[in-house]
Length: 100
Image (cartoon, one colour):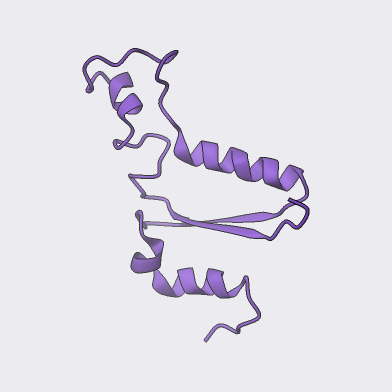
């Protein structure tokens, strides 16, 4: 993209859904021996979602974009619900609207 808007990624450090070891990832469960019939890493590797997202954002930054990762401690999958004030502050920081 010629225009690269800034990206803010807000996530909780206790998110069990978007995680490098997500129990929602069937391949990760297979690697733990919990999902029978898992064909192995070469066919169905676990998906480290945080690492993958960060890698995409790093490529975006290397191509001239900018990103800011905000990790909220003791927060799960829904920062907008669990920590609304901090989430809104990050959102407003992307606009010209002053925080209250």
